[in-house]
Length: 111
Image (cartoon, rainbow, N blue to C red; front, top):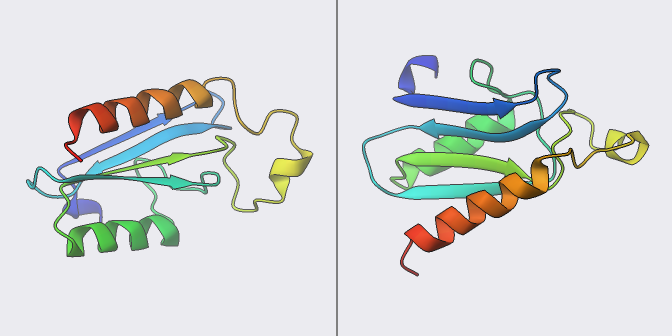
Protein backbone atom coordinates (compact mmCIF):
# COMPACT_ATOMS: atom_id res chain seq x y z
CA UNK A 1 0.00 0.00 0.00
CA UNK A 2 2.98 2.31 0.42
CA UNK A 3 2.99 3.47 -3.20
CA UNK A 4 -0.76 4.06 -3.29
CA UNK A 5 -0.66 7.41 -1.50
CA UNK A 6 -0.33 10.80 -3.13
CA UNK A 7 0.29 12.37 0.27
CA UNK A 8 0.65 11.34 3.92
CA UNK A 9 0.57 13.40 7.09
CA UNK A 10 0.88 12.34 10.71
CA UNK A 11 0.70 14.73 13.67
CA UNK A 12 2.44 12.91 16.46
CA UNK A 13 4.08 14.03 19.71
CA UNK A 14 7.86 14.25 19.91
CA UNK A 15 7.92 11.45 22.49
CA UNK A 16 5.69 9.31 20.20
CA UNK A 17 3.13 8.75 22.97
CA UNK A 18 0.31 10.69 21.31
CA UNK A 19 -1.06 10.94 17.78
CA UNK A 20 -3.46 13.77 17.03
CA UNK A 21 -4.27 13.04 13.43
CA UNK A 22 -3.33 10.86 10.52
CA UNK A 23 -4.30 11.67 6.94
CA UNK A 24 -3.77 10.16 3.53
CA UNK A 25 -4.49 11.49 0.07
CA UNK A 26 -5.43 8.31 -1.74
CA UNK A 27 -6.70 9.66 -5.06
CA UNK A 28 -7.37 12.87 -6.96
CA UNK A 29 -11.04 12.79 -5.98
CA UNK A 30 -12.14 15.88 -4.07
CA UNK A 31 -14.31 13.84 -1.68
CA UNK A 32 -13.01 13.79 1.89
CA UNK A 33 -13.94 11.63 4.85
CA UNK A 34 -13.02 11.80 8.51
CA UNK A 35 -13.03 8.80 10.85
CA UNK A 36 -13.19 9.23 14.62
CA UNK A 37 -11.81 6.35 16.62
CA UNK A 38 -11.33 5.63 20.30
CA UNK A 39 -7.54 5.88 20.35
CA UNK A 40 -4.75 5.52 17.80
CA UNK A 41 -3.11 2.19 17.35
CA UNK A 42 0.31 1.92 15.75
CA UNK A 43 -0.25 3.50 12.31
CA UNK A 44 1.82 6.50 11.32
CA UNK A 45 3.21 7.98 8.09
CA UNK A 46 5.15 4.78 7.38
CA UNK A 47 3.41 1.86 9.10
CA UNK A 48 -0.22 0.86 8.47
CA UNK A 49 -2.04 -1.34 10.97
CA UNK A 50 -4.98 -3.52 9.90
CA UNK A 51 -7.64 -1.01 10.99
CA UNK A 52 -6.06 1.78 8.95
CA UNK A 53 -5.75 -0.53 5.94
CA UNK A 54 -9.47 -1.36 6.18
CA UNK A 55 -10.40 2.33 6.49
CA UNK A 56 -8.33 3.18 3.41
CA UNK A 57 -9.85 0.30 1.44
CA UNK A 58 -13.42 1.36 2.35
CA UNK A 59 -12.60 4.96 1.45
CA UNK A 60 -11.06 4.02 -1.92
CA UNK A 61 -14.04 1.78 -2.74
CA UNK A 62 -16.35 4.74 -2.11
CA UNK A 63 -14.31 7.16 -4.24
CA UNK A 64 -12.89 9.33 -1.47
CA UNK A 65 -9.72 11.24 -2.22
CA UNK A 66 -8.63 12.17 1.28
CA UNK A 67 -8.96 10.19 4.50
CA UNK A 68 -8.35 11.67 7.94
CA UNK A 69 -8.26 9.75 11.22
CA UNK A 70 -8.69 11.45 14.58
CA UNK A 71 -9.39 9.92 17.99
CA UNK A 72 -11.21 10.72 21.21
CA UNK A 73 -8.04 9.78 23.12
CA UNK A 74 -4.63 10.58 21.63
CA UNK A 75 -2.63 7.98 23.58
CA UNK A 76 -1.10 5.51 21.11
CA UNK A 77 -1.81 1.96 22.20
CA UNK A 78 -2.88 -1.25 20.54
CA UNK A 79 -4.62 -2.13 23.82
CA UNK A 80 -7.46 0.28 24.68
CA UNK A 81 -7.53 -0.92 28.31
CA UNK A 82 -4.28 1.05 28.82
CA UNK A 83 -6.40 4.21 28.59
CA UNK A 84 -7.74 3.49 32.09
CA UNK A 85 -4.27 3.20 33.60
CA UNK A 86 -2.59 6.18 31.94
CA UNK A 87 -2.41 9.55 33.73
CA UNK A 88 -3.41 11.57 30.63
CA UNK A 89 -4.87 9.37 27.86
CA UNK A 90 -6.57 12.31 26.11
CA UNK A 91 -3.30 14.15 25.59
CA UNK A 92 -2.69 17.84 26.08
CA UNK A 93 -3.49 18.87 22.48
CA UNK A 94 -6.11 16.35 21.45
CA UNK A 95 -9.30 18.28 22.23
CA UNK A 96 -7.98 21.26 20.25
CA UNK A 97 -7.18 19.02 17.28
CA UNK A 98 -10.61 17.37 17.39
CA UNK A 99 -12.31 20.77 17.47
CA UNK A 100 -10.11 22.21 14.70
CA UNK A 101 -10.60 19.19 12.41
CA UNK A 102 -14.36 18.97 12.88
CA UNK A 103 -14.78 22.73 12.49
CA UNK A 104 -12.77 22.73 9.25
CA UNK A 105 -14.64 19.71 7.93
CA UNK A 106 -18.10 21.09 8.80
CA UNK A 107 -17.37 24.55 7.37
CA UNK A 108 -15.89 23.27 4.13
CA UNK A 109 -18.61 20.70 3.39
CA UNK A 110 -22.09 21.40 2.13
CA UNK A 111 -24.44 19.12 4.02
